[in-house]
Length: 455
Image (cartoon, rainbow, N blue to C red; front, side, top):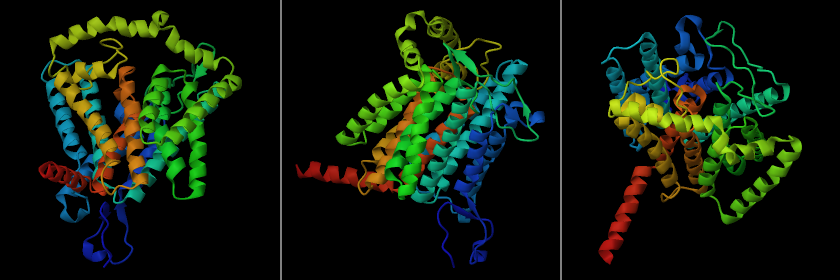
């Protein structure tokens, strides 16, 4: 009888698995989701369903049910070995449900009620994706396959953005049977340049997604098993590097700096110097290739006292704090904040605190912090090879790139960046489980205790 690999879920009973019968492949399922997530604008929906009719969301929602079913069925093949992300994600799931109850504990407008329902459905799908990745991917090789496909998906977004930048046209791929839930975003301008968004909902999201994917692209360009794959990933890395500044977004540049800074901690000094040299070379190349772009990017950080977007964010501070003090601990309810009934905040930390209160904001931050810390720790566990350790560190760096941007725009409103974030969080859980992180951590603690007793 063929042994069942963890994460490969039989569609039939174990007794019927002697042949090559189809199995549920978590990576294949999530690949369909990634194609829809990166390939179709989130504004395109199944008409009667409205905002929750995005094809990517409709595929993501069953993920939580699949994960829960895997835990109910003993023969599912779902890996039950412990890792730090599972309890944190389940606590976050409970927080989302509690916040939904809190929202309906007060009178809601029609817009608030629909927002709360939409946020709940979307959030449950994202948590389900993270849990399915964390517990359902059966090997490091399959996890690498999934993450490579994330890089490919983001590169598709980057290339479409490059075409938008050159042509000045939206160039949106469409799927038959879908309708636009809101007006198609044209290529907006800043300074003399059009700001591409590709299939994302805004140029800021475009810049953050492409920036956050860079540590993963660099990893596969350095550590892929096949030379051809390394070369292909090097090309994808170059495309992502070019795409990030085209959106002319502070958020993207800050995300890029934070992600690559964290990624560099896993490198040797020689590799850091090589990266610094490439960065120095890239500036004049960009300056010559797109006249005026470098100066515009520098101006984003030198003229902040006169920048209306920054001043508007600062001016909103007192109003946000006053509203938080009205419902400090539990907030208004997840998904109930809207620009139409309140005002634009452009800071996800503030929005999360307004909607879920201080407790909800802390528990949300706990998910991201756990993902980053666990990802970095994996590299230092005994028995973890250089390649796997570097992958874990790269995933942590990508998470940092996205979470830093939470201070500059309402990130949870955007489907691609949040979908990518939860895939990465799930990937950290899968890595910890697959390398035997708990056993390794216990071994380290026991060794340190033995040394302490010896002293």
